[in-house]
Structure formats: C-alpha cells, structure tokens
View 1 (tube, helix red, strand yellow):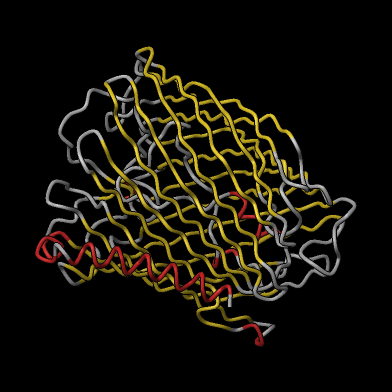
View 2 (cartoon, rainbow, N blue to C red):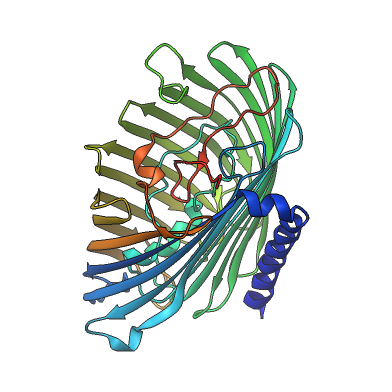
Length: 470
C-alpha cells in the first residue's frame, strides 16, 4: 500500500508539470522534441544475486528508451527533460527470472527562470529493480560531479544519490527507489548568492518488507570574495526514518570555498580546474546511529580539450538503505572520461564507501571501465567491465539484506543501441550523441545579473545537448 501511495504522488507531480506545459501549448509544440532508442545487450555476470552463494548466468537485456525535451522560446537548449526506460531481461540458465518491466528507470528535470536573478530546478529519479543485480539494468558511476556551490544546469537530471546505490550491494530482492529534489537560487547582488533545496529519498523493499525515507531541507549563502573564490556556508536538517521505524533528526552545518582556475585553456567558456571543499558538523538527535560527526565534501575537477577527470571524498550522516539506522558514511570517488577519436570514447571510475551504523559496519567498492564506439550516426556500441565488492562485519544478518563476510562479483557486457528522432523530424538520428561530441561544463562563479543567455543544457546522459528547435 505504501509503495502504491508513493507512486501515486510521483504521478501527481508529473501531471502538474504536464498541466503547466499545457498552458503554453503553442510554444510546447514549437519547442518540443522527442527521441527514441532501442538497446540490446548481452551480459555475463558471475554473481547475479550478489550473495555468498555465487550464481552465474548470461543475461540478454532489451531496453527501449523514450526521451522528451522542451525548450522555451528564450532558450536554444532543453530546460525540461524526461526519460522513460523499462528493461526486459532474459536469462540463459534461470528462465524463471525472465521479466519485462520489473527493471524500470524514469527520470526527469525541469528548470524555470523566473527572472535574471531567480531560478528554480525540479528533478525526480525513479528506479525499480528486480531480485537479480544485472549491470545492464542499473546505473553506473555518478560521472563528473558539481562543485559544492554548483546549481543544476537547465533541464539536468540529478545523479542517483550514493545511499540509493547501496541497493546494488545488497540481496534485498525487488526494490523501488525514488529521489526527488527541488532547489532555488537567488542572486542577491553581483557577489552574494543564496540557494535553498529540499530532497526526498525513498526506498521500498518489495520482497523483504519495510521502507527507508530521508527528507532534507537546507539553505546556503555564497560570497564571491575573490576573482577565483566562492566562500560559502550552509545549514540543513535531515530526518531519517529507517526500515525499523525509528526517526532520527540530523542538523548539518558546513562552510568552505570553491576555487576556479581561469588561467588555462578554456572549453566552452568553462574553467579547466575546480577545487571545491567544505567542512562541517552533523549532530544526530535520534536514538540510533552516530551522534556527532565531522562532515566533509572535497572535490577536484579537471577538464582538458578532450578529457575530464574528477577526484573527491564525501563524509556525513546518511541512511544505510535499510541495513540499519543512520550511518556515518565516508565515500571516496574518482571518474575519468576521454574522447580517443571522432567516434571512440572511453571511461573509467572507482567508488569506495565505508558505512558505520549502530548495528553493523560494511564497505562497498565499485570499479568499472568501458569503451563506446559510434558505428554510424544512429548506431552505437559499448563494451564495459565492472567489479563489485562488499565486506560486512559483526551484526550483519545472513537472512536479511547483507551477510557477514565478503561478497564480490564481476560482469562484462556488450550492448548495441539504435537511435531515432521522433519529433519534429521522424527518422534515424542524423548526429552523434551530444554526450559523445561535447565536453562537460563546470559551473562558474556568480556574475553580474543580466538577461538570461541561451546555453547548452545537459542531455539525458549528463552532457550538453544540441538545440531542439525544429
């Protein structure tokens, strides 16, 4: 019942957005675009349930993906993005697991410019996963992060939160995960910016029962105190309701600086080096989990003409994806992307997290590398390898989400994707994917307010997208 109610709320939000767009039907028709892709891939996974009892299988994954884009008359790039991608999985050795729609991804983002000084951003990411842990049926690494003071680019889809990615390292069976966020940014003066945000993270364990809910509201002030620096301070409150029903209120304080290097070669008018950092304090007033924690968020981003690299660490009090109550979580991450030739690109990344809860401590590790090659403007191919590892200490429940000890898996998959334009021109895609062609932009420091300028917005995969004008 709880899962159905949550889905109904998500659908209600979608209806509200549709009604808002309906008020401007003529403009929507003129500035609307849609795309469709069909991916067929083959994966070998040596631990499809990610458990101590290793079960291997070959999995055929078929994923249709519908993308809707909208750009208002003042923009040349989308400010609204919606992606709908159900997956069908066919198992070579375990036909009882065959399904279509039990693995579903739905995400979208919308940016509204109220004035040159004030803008809002709304995003939602919904993901349903079946009991197996197929790599083709879930997201990869987070990709290039934003600095602490960064605001989502127009139409951006928020990356899946780290706590939701813990579902890839448990034996939770069927799960439903949703991440909703709304944020606003106000340019008070050329040097002072205020941002406010609200996030809602929900995880429902459809097989084992129960759910975890995290609500957070925060505000941040940024002072552009030097040509290359953003001094910032923020305060937020998180309410964590764990799967056992306990509620924990966690106030968070943080302060820090973003450093931008404007001296080197620039790509799309973006700085090539960003060092972003903040330190703070989190206090858990609930009955379970860590009481006080020193928090940190440090990120280094470097961009070259044909490549990008990020390295960072995050530390704070988070949920534990139903394993226990609140967790003191420390995450180290790195990501590298490079364009090798006109049609060939590569990516590699690692993510290592240490989770410390009142009942159990466990670590997760993910390393992956892949290549993507565009055979034609409408047909692409990808080859990817991923290694996952989890270790859990005393307190882990062998009959629940995680078992004590070590669990690991390896997977290799090859996928081919065909891309089509639906509207305003029907036919095979005539251009390479924007994520392949363009490097990634990094948010810049606050500037003098002015009329909004047309700019490129992220595509569904996170990089700037081309114009959607007919």
